[in-house]
Image 1: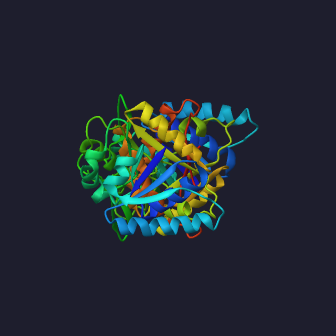
Image 2: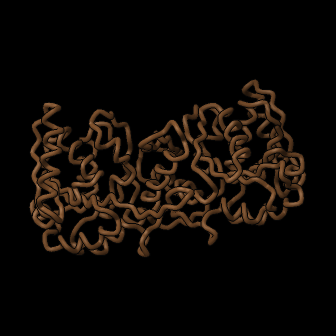
Image 3: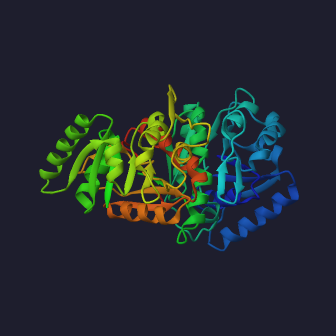
Length: 222
Length: 222
């Protein structure tokens, strides 16, 4: 498959690009609003993978072109750009392109981070609402620590939760997730259950803040 | 210490009574609105512990009397009773009594359970608001699977998150938690961070619903 990471120059995008590049045979397409930025990120990721003896195919494009070429499009953009990014690439999406959203709305104060979803209930549901009707949307990769994900020296042993209304799309994303070493995908139900999944993201950051011996906190459901 | 479990005839109360009775030297006081119900629960718990060769001290009282005698009071009541229960026992609370709240507001529909906090933001904060000002409040034991907790044949390996504004009270509850075999306490910050902790409870129930091989789901932060 071809997997586009829109906002693939950011931290979750970097981690997914490196892990998918190292652990799977899929082709990674880095998308950015600025094609030059995408190409620079590609060069960095290829250097990192080559230094580890991995020969992965990564290419850089503007978001629309990356989306047009992809089987799975991951919206690894900040939450406040998620809706607009979907609309910007909408013409390149179709029923055969799975749209994956890992973004979470949060607000910080002196106590820590707090879950701050959009009015529709969750960023995941916002993305589904803004995407063309026929495009299957899957919420995934919400609660992964970006630092651990992008450091290939870190052996992962983490769970990620999937929400989707389309079982085939969910199954495809589950298979992709399972190909990444140390990641397990669990089903959290339909898109309507996304808020409880997303709200774990500020929580893992709060746990890292308040427990001195914990960094890059992730989660295992047992 | 003396630990009162108000609503100690329910499932989380049962689990905490059995685990504290088996794993610690603290005295367990079962509280109920109906003293007869409290005494019946005590008889059941003592039978269960005796059958395992454990000689634990458990006593049953009406909630007010259990609170009056206790160093730690756990509000193991349904969320919609939490505020009223605090007010019912308020005269028996004081600055030396730690009030612990594990309750979570949830609503179910065909998709699963959804987090449904009271207007003040979380049940934990509601309890703090309804308690006399000088009483230290700690949120704890929110995300424990009641079935696993109350089955002493199940070896736990679970985390529970603590939220409190009073560091001494948090530390006391942390020590109690750590005495229960297989439970680890992590700090999630002040009471203002309770909502993200509470919202994990519907999530673990949704994970159990949508993954056939998972039951009594709990969580480890890694």
